Length: 230
Image (cartoon, rainbow, N blue to C red; front, side):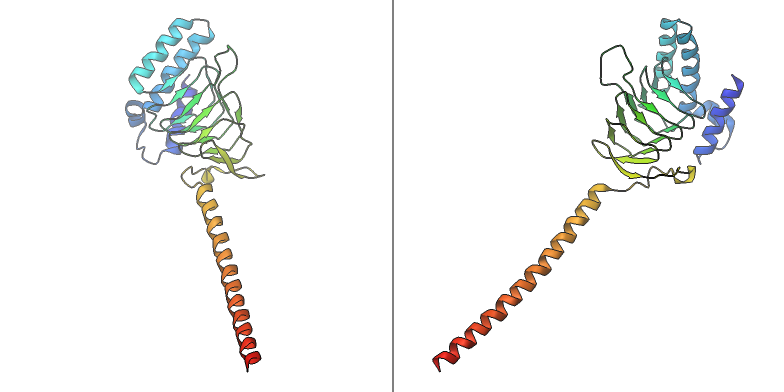
């Protein structure tokens, strides 16, 4: 238990530049508090104390604004930054060293009693307000941009943005921790608009060339007509 708490504390110090002391984390970080409630609730849940597990989970939700179902599976080094509005469903699975920002939902799309929530691989970062909905996997080392809505499988080492979420960057090599800055994401809409502007400029140049050629030919015809009259 103490080893797990130590890992949770280390995750905060590794990923939050604002933290100043362990005491501050223990008393002032709702993400850390939510994990404490979750670990107790999960221990009760796996021992078939389902009501007590849900009760502890609801207490954690009341005190932190973070809802983690006691049936969810969470790996080591998990960090929730700020945390208000985070929802993690019953069959969600989260790998090691993952980070969620506030307003993230790991939700389901089915009422059937089956695997209906997403699985996050190791080293996944999910930006604030993002929704990952369905029983698919977000691959290791991937990033999900803020306010994205992901409803399909995400390959490892990928970046996903938009509604619905689209893979806008995918690499064959692992992404290091230093590269996992979810605010530094590409903008596919801006890129598409830029491509349209490039095409418009190209068309304008062609129209200008054709117009000049037309005026040149018109001038030649006029000159030819004058000579015939003479």
